[in-house]
Image 1 (spheres, rainbow, N blue to C red):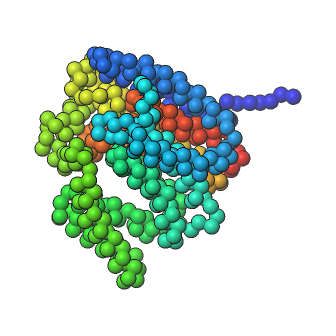
Image 2 (image 1 turned 135 degrees about the vertical axis):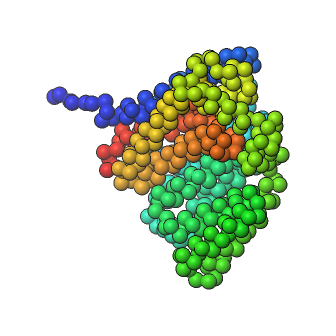
Image 3 (image 1 turned 120 degrees about the vertical axis):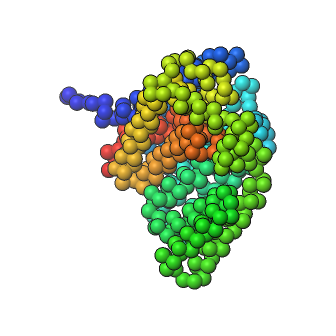
Length: 409
């Protein structure tokens, strides 16, 4: 009996090749960024080894039964919380962040691996038949699942990863089908809190918009008053949270408001990043020929500022090509998530998409000066073993669902 087997029926080659190309571009950029740096000379080889290990992780996850992800949703979440607690006690402090376990030259970052557990646990809860996301109880439980790891990560403190988790929660709530009013309740305190950082005028404008929103939704006076009080509290509480941040984090936020206020301090990286991106022009200066990169104007450029290397040495063409690869990957994930009738699987894939998208948005945004420098790696491209393994693990879940998609459509 002849079996007509096509590779594309079981394996999303386009998705996999997008990852491979991004990883190879990242390797080249890491090599260039560390070429004249004696201290970081071994980073290229370490990233290569992590890449090979990640490929093994990818295919292990790819061949697992798809039902495995639902089974491990709660255990993986509980294990993630345990490690997030443990790192606060016995973790290694690096650059003011107590967010790493150190085993010799090997580093392990629990907040990266906790993304998987949080996504799976949120997908498990939101996909339960008796969950009504429009009820106050279920919204609170959902926020509790998402915000518990956020609180632990905030204590490290790691503001960049905190924003990823907050965005993850919002995207999964939106995909679940939360109403516009429910989304308004969740988002408005965050917007008011953020606006308060820019001054009293912005704070008052944000509160005015909240009042306009409450009038538009036409809820009863007590309920509307409670939401307004929540937003007022969020704005005033922001000052307390801001004072609790480390001095370097406060400077980064203030530098975002005025990058030139500290050009040789907290604003240095942001200014030099824009210089590097702009100097690349349309076609770039060529591999190993970027002045900003080779003269090491930007510290540890192989991590959060890797996109500067691409922009300077590969130019506008190289930068756009990277974005196109990410766009293709995003569209593939959304298409697979949209085609499945299994809500748990669909929510899981959207959670994975949100992590990739938020990382890309923040990383590129801070490089070109649109977002504060908060320390977010570029998926598959930046140097870092924990980040690479977790991102490839999640990609393996997407590929796994694609392989078994006919069972869920």
